[in-house]
Image (cartoon, one colour):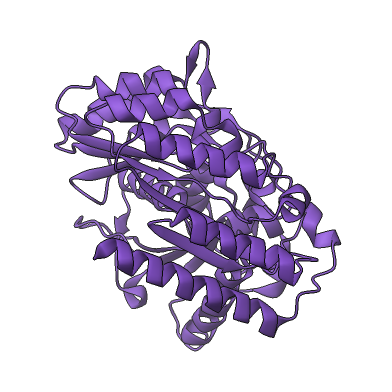
Length: 386
């Protein structure tokens, strides 16, 4: 995903985004900050004075794409007189910190998710240096809390829809997930600031919103929990439609389902990652619920939220996953009949507990299991469409 601004300024910035909707919103935040600092965004890599990669560490494949792109950038500009500043930001920056400079010596600066507000100043400082190229390296990965004002620059790529971050980080510590390491523990924004951001966007003509969090259901600020926040968003005038992602099964309540059923502006859509249909694998994943709990939850959702859309995430080939474990997942998908599912092959992530487990499901078997569930879900989705 690329962003551009039609300003006539000297310094041009190219930014490419990898990963989830949270990263998409982070890129918008960075664009807004850079715009205020007097930079021009460009979609043309060859015209850029600064190149930024906003990265993802959730899966190996996402990281591999970034390393490949960094190598291509190095080759592309190695013989040119004008070499742009190169920055790696986001989750990979937090995950690898200054180690990135060893693997990609052409990178000039590294900035973690909680330090993105420092990017304009870092670029300004490095641009003013007269040292040989790459002589100075900058990394900022020690931030804890983002300044609230970064969410109020008024920059949104889509002029009808906006992502609104309600919480940052995650405290669930699922054994396969690197998010708590790269984005920190759960931090909830003040609900008043969230509502102000939505109202500011409404004043710009935006009337559709998606509330974002690694686990939106865990939202709690003072006496306002996620259900109460949803009710307050519903009351914002001129707002036409909103939704939320992502929910965690263990924190999903019947109260949320009732609010979903009652709110006219809230989309009847729930993304509820199950990850596995095997109780043994769910325990190893530290998911905090059982297969039966999940099935009962979905049964309640469909009874209360009539016609509600349901999607999920699934991981196949988790360490020690047996054929029976996989069959349990396959059977669960068949029973529930999700409207859509995002199916992933397990890959070990640095700084996670699961990395210490043997990655013992052969690649070919992971691919076979991935293909089988993909085909099953495709048939289910086609049937639902008909």
